[in-house]
Amino acid sequence: MKSKKKYPSNFANHLVKSLNQWASVIAVVGSVSFVLLVTLFPFNFTPTNFSFQTINSRLGAKSDLSDLVGNVLLFIPFGFSLFGLLIKSKIKILWAIPLTILANTGLSFTVEILQIFLPSRSPDYSDVITNSTGGLLGTISYCVWNLAKFKSQLSRLGKNIKPLLSRQKLAAALIIWVLFTGFVALALQRATYLSNWATDFPLVLGNEATGDRPWQGTISQLAIAPRAMNESEIAQVFANQNFSASESLIANYKLVGKDNYQDQTNQLPDLIWQGNQPQNQITTGVNVTSDSWVSTPTPATNLAQKLRQTSQFTISTIVATANPQQVGPGRIITFSSDPFQRNFTLGQHYSYLVFRLRTPITGENGMYTGLSVRGIFKDNQPIHLILTYKHSLLRLYVNSPENVHILELTPEITLFRYLFPFEGDNLHLTKLGLLVNKLMYYCLFFVPLGILTALIITLFPARLSWTILLFIGGIVVPALLLELLIRGEYGLEIENLSISIAIATITMLLVRNRLIVWLHSTAN
Image 1 (cartoon, rainbow, N blue to C red):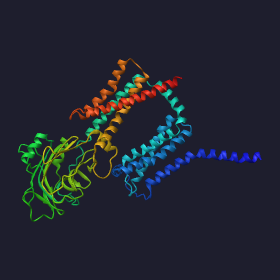
Image 2: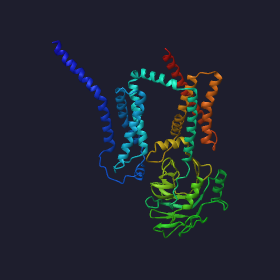
Image 3: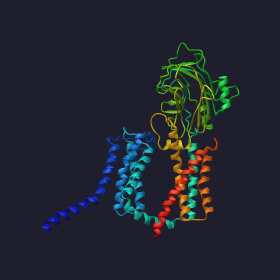
Image 4: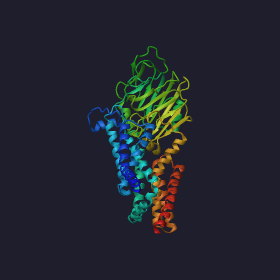
């Protein structure tokens, strides 16, 4: 009887052991199959000319918020199962983590390349980042799930790393990180210049050049200067309802009569009627409709070159909508070739004024982080609009210098929009949204700074005076330099400086506390 009971028991144990050995392999294969099914179905691959240009042009679609969240969640099971398989295969955690991250990135990149040959898919570079983030979260989830198992390994890992750390190496790492932070901040600043403006676009009033984004209303004036005017100059323009003769304009159109309209500066082509030229034109401006608008017959190359050189402009126009409920947005003034490629566009969407601007960070369409102001087109009365832009600061004045709306393409906003370029409407930046962007930006740079400072202070204790000096040199000074670097032109903001110092200090204290506990445990 005993032998009969023992046989099933041994068989069951052997079966469970075999299943455990293959469970991780099955989980990895299953998670990979699931990723491929979700991202490549229905597998109707279409041959195309495989070249770098093809890859670059197809990897241009942007993901919306649901896609970003879905991409992260999709790769969590793969990261979890693969990391578990590597650990069960007796691979050290120091190697298992980078191998898992590398495999996640490789799988994601493979999927994006294969999606190039699927007409129904829209591959994008940012998907690689979000997919890899999902794999990393899966790895972290496995570590948390099996925390007790990793305590001894983490302790051994710490003992192995500690001899490799020295005060000089940590100080060098801190300096390198500060320099890297400054480099990124400068790169983000340059991403708000107009350096990517196209020179082969026409200037169009009342529609797109393709004729499929009409606006109905009256445009009485259009003047463009290649610099951002200050508030006193803006007040003078509103008072005179025109630019003075001494202004260095790049374009100045007097929109009177029904014939073609000449640029008074003689630097841009004339505005020519497109579609069906209306027979009865009002004398106070250009009356554009769904089938009649004006455009330069050739590209406004001088305008693009001049504004690209200065990365500044002032646009002044007087408009009156014929319909406060127009959608599209309808193009009032656009410097573009079609609905998807522009240098700038001023439009109307219901009562909203929409302004899209092309920069390296906002893309060729200029719709990411555009200015959208509600209640501008609430009736049919004429509105005097003045827009100024200088590097990263966009100002919209409506009828007076006091009625101003501002959008600042700060480094935190540009970084967030680069990593997560949502598809759809322009970004409406609330106070909460601005605060979240700011916290993400400063955490990215000052959490590592706090960790490095904590390592130096804890592993190499010194006198209080040296500790204070290190705190000032390692946290306060970099925060001050970064703030001056990115906002020196507009003045130092104490709020941002306080946030960056607080993040680094809190991180330093938390890490130092954990390091002290760990050092005591290893000493025992």
